Amino acid sequence: MIWIVGAGPGDYGLLTLRGHEVLRRADVVIYDRLVGAGIIALIPESAERIDAGKSPGNHTMTQREIESVMISRAIEGKNVVRLKGGDPFIFGHGGEEVEAIISAGLAFEVVPGVTSATSVPALAGIPATHRDYCSGVNIITAHGKRNLIPDFSASTSIFLMGVSHAKELQSRLLETMQPDTPCAVIQDGATSRQRVVRCKLSGLYEAVRENNITPPAVIVAGKTAGLNLSRRGNFPLAGKRIIITRPESRNAELSLRLRDLGAEVIPLPTITTTTLHGSIDGVSLAGYDWVGFTSVTGVEALFELLCESGRDIRELGGAKIAAIGQATKDALNSHGLRVDYMPEIFDGHHMAEGIASFGGRVLMFRAQSGTPEIESVFRKYGTDTKQVCIYRIDYVKLLHVPNFTDIIIFTSSSTVRGFAMSVSGLRDALAVCIGSQTAEEAVKAGFSRVRIAGRADVESLAEACT
Image 1 (cartoon, rainbow, N blue to C red):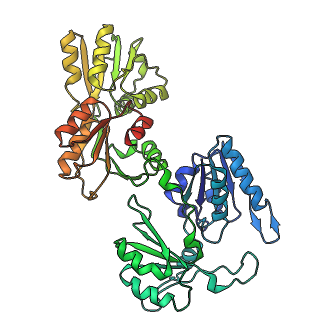
Image 2: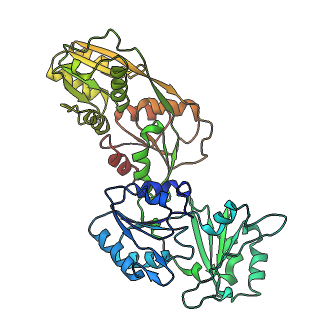
Image 3: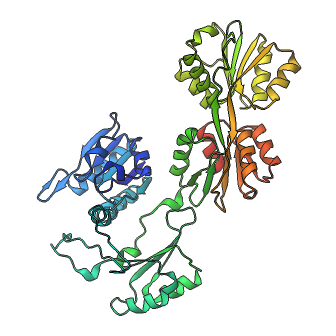
């Protein structure tokens, strides 16, 4: 994968969140001279760094060499970030580099950056536009490809808030531009509902009217409007808006994967979790054959409680460990605990059945308001069980809910209940769930389209959304 990333005008605080996300995952970073030192410092230590800086009369690498290295590293299976100052499509070689990537048949994404054309004057207290003084801004390079001062008439013209005046705008532009000048109208840009309508200048108004273009929209006129250097439409989740309801601290990896697949992601946590301090005080952890964990939160809460009480995990002795889902298993592994049993179907019912089939005494760490299935299964098999509630789930009152979405991801029954308590609509969305219990809760909440992920991990959730 190749990402063409705009690094902004220099200050690392002006690097976009998406730019930071992909930079952290880079195996190779090819960076320009104008990329700020603070952003260079964000490059992972493990990544190969390639300085492709250029200054007048002094090029570290030619443009063709940059493109060759970028493509060859990607063919080797590496994540390549081409890090460029400002915005990659404003007076840089971003367009040429994307054309080279397309010719090579490789996957890529362009991550826009904050352009110095507007940000640097703004930081100096100079607004590019002001309602009392001007109604537009021309951004023109003073150093063209062949001439020092390029032909101003060859500039691309970009118009904001022009849909309602498309007829008048077309008429005025035809006074100085040819009727066959390429134009593009971009509605709802940078969202899952983005639409791009291309036309000639002579047909601009007709294109806006026939395609029912409504604000917000950007109108572009000029030769570059005839180019199409985007491949986002080929991404599996392009055009999809997805809401994630799990706690925000658990969102990062899933959100990143969904955006990689082209989705617009909206984190909308419906629950929060709180460790129940003192909940293991006086509770013996010894003498059990099995210790079970139903979530990552349970793992983290236990180690927090052990630490604050001056105890440690050695109290469990030789007990075997059971866990629901890959994420919970990974959390236990990160604390040096090997998981002995994980059910093929990731829910409490199947984990309890599996543990009961092995026999022995069981210690379960769970949420205060956890589902009763685990307890009922152990009771059915007569399993000697102690359940300790070590964290609490609280529901979040959602204040800003979008009026449409395509998919809602639920990772537990409690996330469904939290959503149902706050939101009365959006039941026509596809509910993607971890486990049958969560899916049953989604049906109870009124979702008619429910899909269960094959496993309780990021890849399976993402796959279930496609």
